Image (cartoon, rainbow, N blue to C red; front, side):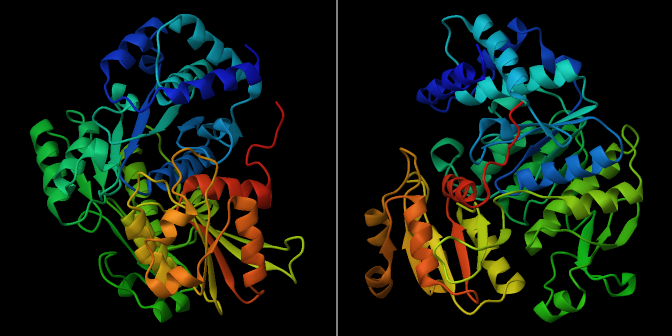
Length: 453
């Protein structure tokens, strides 16, 4: 198969829906030569923040001179975004070659889209002989296709409700699924909150004798550069204090401290994510040591498109520039972090919101969180069979907001309405769905993977 044929074949696998379970994945990888046994891993699970933690690990380790594989999901607009080695996305020829190998071994058997991409990532990383492969869990953890590995360190960022149809309706049930990545004797770094999810995770660690390192207990962070004035990340920090610190922050780690860190990622929650990455790197130091210089350079360079991504553009037909914030938050905890960032990290005259949601999410809860902040609300539907319709979302709004909300049939039309409703002093927020963010970002910035290799 060439690249286009491989992509078309992969797209047809979308018809095979989510399937949780490891037996078929392990058997299939055995037929491919067990590429996972040729690699060393960091495994990242959690409801939100997985991609940011993984991107931070990649940024630091690559700057320390290691060859680092990164496998994440979903992609914004091109499947090749899921596969990286350092700053290089997988090339079309390599994608096609490994996809062909999978197709030939598969024969008439069926696997899911995610199983296919996971196998492709493992084959590519093994062929390129990466020093370390960072795998982001797709869904849950216990039965996720990535859970065929034994990592050097595991990470569970946090636990909140999402994908209830697959993971459960309580925090304890969701935590049990995510705790399924914990392996006997393998250290775990986690930011789970002090609720029933923490109890589940810590109990699992005790059962498997896996050392557990907890954000706020074993390591923490604070805004600023003053070691004497630091405070744990669990404590509140005022807007004025954060602003006075010039967005610098201080990491108090397992074995030491680093002050005056800078990063491009916005939002308090991103300092949590970056701290999880730094604690992970501390545990990995005997295997892959990194210098403080690499840490500073890597953390300052971390970029995770579509997650609180701020753009300033000049749209065609608009009267001047527009300030745009893209964020893929799509569950209550993620939207809560978005709301916090809007209040702490951005100033604007009016907020114009372009919003979409997948129908299998808690659509009403998301709208209830964001609608009160919106001066203008545009409801739309990205290209997905799972998208909630603008009309359905409108009915979930309070009467006053329902009357004022606008509807657009596609992303391009929604952005045009946003330009018309905004001025250069306003902020246009595009959020609620990574499908929407991916479509909008492609229109505004072009493809993230630009090369034709």
